Length: 178
Image (cartoon, rainbow, N blue to C red; front, side, top):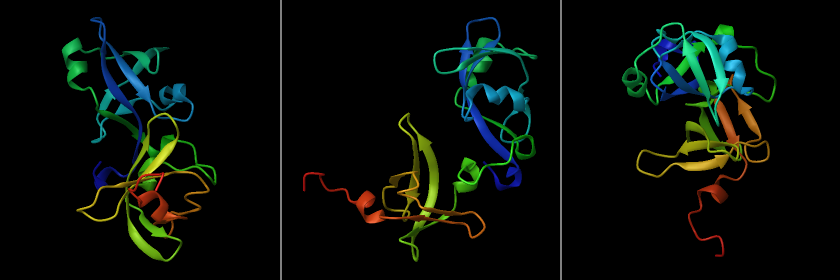
């Protein structure tokens, strides 16, 4: 997402069309998945309305949404993978231990507190919990660190930094039995 729209926060993604009647499949990234619709309309990264839902029902791991302005199946399918955003001011304030992904991406990463080791490239979740993807330098592979209080004890948005308690353990590409 561009810096010019830093007031937008990602809340979901389009998964493609559902059937041929103009419905679309949407995956929610909000803590309570159905809350995504409380912040509607859902925008693209430029702030243009993509989906203004009139109704939504649960699918297996997503929602099937009927939009005020339906699109053809091919149109929804062409938008597959498009992230959905809402203005930050429509979202509730975060608690002390909660963060919006956009606030974490780009933060400097420090090991043990004082040694800068890289930047947060992304925040991922493949079902087992959040992971911080850290880019050490342009040539190396990113390092994934669980986003837990034990592994990332400090997140300081004011200073633009996070601290990874034991970065070397996560960066080690050796075999676990070694």
